[in-house]
Each structure stands twice: as C-alpha cells, then as structure tokens.
Length: 487
Image (cartoon, rainbow, N blue to C red; front, side, top):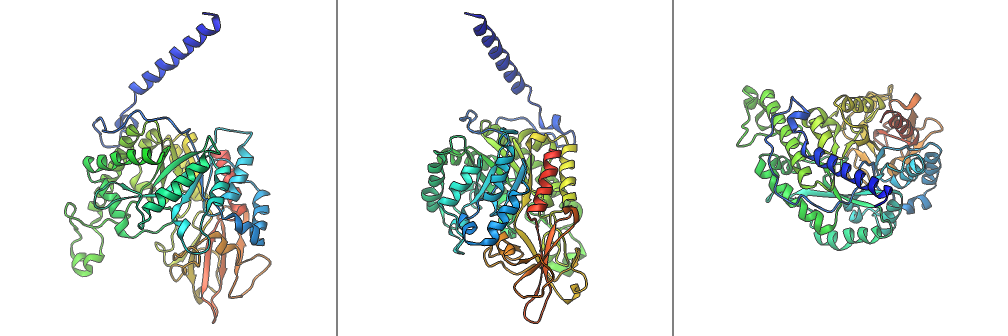
C-alpha cells in the first residue's frame, strides 16, 4: 500500500468516525431550545435508510408560459428590464414569471457559487385550469432547464384517514399518468434535477376553515402524527420523489371542538358561534399546535433522513406556530415566504404594501437571531399581485396606507378574489403619466424600492376603483441585493 492509499484510508476512517459520532450525539429538542416543551426521544416507525437523492439548500419559482413572451410585447419588455437588473442568488420567486427570473439567477450564481439551488414550484392544478394559460410540456422543460429542484404541488391531508393524499379534485389518475410521469421523462435530460413533493397548499391561496381542519387533525396526538408520517414514505417511493416541502396550513383563529370547548362568556350569548374563543384558552391551543408541529418536523426527519425536508414559513403565522430553533436543526431548507404580510381579506379597511423590504429584513433578522443557519434560509419574493377595491374616499390620497372597500375583484385568469397573476397586471400598467382610463392602472415606483411598487385606478362612473400591490423587476432586484448581502 503506497502513501497516497494510506492517507486516503486514514481520511475515510476519520470521516466515518466523525459522522457516526455526530449522529450519536444528535441533541434533543430540549437541547436546541430550552423554552420548548420536553419531548421524549422515541423511535419513529418507518424506513430509516432511504436512497440519498438530494443536495441541500434552494430557492423556488414557478414556470411561465413561454408562449406569452413570444406573443405579448409587454412580456418581452419585462424580460429585457428584468435582465438589466438581476434577481440574485438565494431568491425565491413564487409566480408565473419564473422562467424569466430563474434565467437571471442561473447567470448570476453560475460561476460564483455552484452550491446554490433554484427550486421551482409546479402547481399541477394549473395544467387543467381552463383559462387558456395552462402549463404544458414546454413550460416544464423551460423550468427544468433553469432550475435545480422542482416542488410538485400540492399533496393534501385526507380528512377521513389522516394520511397524505394526492387526490385533489378527483385528479389522481391524471396526476399518476400525465404529470409525474411527464416530469420524470424530462428529468432524464437533467441528471442533477431533483423532485420534491409539496405538502400543503400554495402560499398565495386563501383557504377556508374546512381545509385547515385536515392539517390541525394531524397535530392532535402522536398517533395522528405517525399515521400521517408513515403514509408519506410510500408516496415518495411510489412516485420517486427526492424530498418534501411542508407548507403547513394553520388556522389563525381556532374553532371550538369536543376537546377544546369554546369559553367566551357573555360574548357567546351576544354573538353566538361567530365569536372567538377566550384568548387565554386560544393561546394554549396555539402552544399545543406549535409543540406538536415541532414534534412532526422532528419525527418526519427521522423517517426521511436521506431525503431533503424543507419547511415553508408563512409570515402571518411566524410568531405563533414555528419553533425556530427546532425547525433550523431538523429542516434542510427554511423557506421564508417574505410576502403577504398584509392580506386583503384580513385588512379589509386598508390597502398597503404586502411585502415591503423592511418587513423582509425584520423576518430574516428574527430567524438569524434565533440561530438559523444562513445556508438554510431561502427568501421569497412573490410576483403576483394583491388587490383592493377603493372608493371616492381615496380620490385625494392613493399613497399607502389607502382607505379600502374590501378585497379586489376576481382576476380573469387567477379566478380568485384579491389576487392578480402578473400578466393580468402588466398589460394594464401605464408609466408615462396619470390616466383615468377604465382599462389601465397608474404605476407608482416609490423611491429606493424599500416599500414596493403599487398601481391604482380611481373609481369612475364606468369602473370601480382598484389598488394593487406587487413587486416589479426593480423592487425584486433590490430585495435580491439585500438577500445576497445578508444571507
């Protein structure tokens, strides 16, 4: 045996010894966060030695219909404008503009840091939306040529069994035959491309109470958690997924149930079922869900040890349901969805920037203060728009905060109240001066892009007023620069 071989054997011996020691000394949840409830270490049933498939870290985006860039001049202009800035590394773009942004991300990080990942979102429901903008093989191919990971969404929780379910709106067969097989067929052209399963719902969606119940039920006990966890592994194996992204749907205002009866005193008599539970009891339930979700993350990772596990952080739930130190330790990626800090249906009386950079800064700093690893933090920039109706009360003040009359109208393509796809916004924008046309929006770029971009249309006899908050290429580039310097 020569000197080189001896050195190699010594190196491998040291590496394996350190690896075994590091796994043996894995701290408990209490070691990570003394404030957390003590959790008894237990063996979680399920497969523990699964095939290693995925590298760590990521950013996520969602494919854009390439045909739009060919047919709509405004999209070509947008691409040129976006290219002149640069959506930098570690930037998440959750919209239909991903093909544009990811190309720039790839260009920026290609030589500088090959370890960075670009994780794309594929919402399969958009493949049969019926609005003329369905995703197809070309869209997927464009995205997969630009991205390193794809989050396939979205798996839900079966309300009857408490197990993971891909059967969304009766589309299971279509999922099995067309979508997942199509992705794997394309995957053969991109050897390093990885496929993650998104569990939850699109961050942009506003779900009703019934959808939250399914997720809350999983967190009721160790038994319900393990039933759910053990249903995940067969799905990953059957469809050859490389990991998961937990986009857990918590309920902000919890309803009473058999185990947690409503206690609201005289307000129940006055308001009936419309009132909320006593604040102290509701706080206790929040703590229960928070601790149970932390247990879920820990238990899930023990089963999916050789898979990537990402946890998406919804900003309005950040301080309530997420134990930051636990998530930082067990999750491979922390997706900070730094948008939708304000939502039309939660703040009906006021229209405001939904994702100002100072709130992004506050969110990132908070996680860093709680010892989150910079290499795990992925920052999100949404490129869809939130909308509010405005009335004559806003004639003399269109700068945020603006008096609003509730959620904006349903988008022609998004088909949802209070949200426009970007292509619904950009074709209406006017940047060369004020207009009162019923068909256009007056775009306003605030100085330094620290607050964001907004557009508005004043009410007339022919059309209702509209106020729109969104990120354009310049404001997204400002956030990307911040992310590059910060994390």
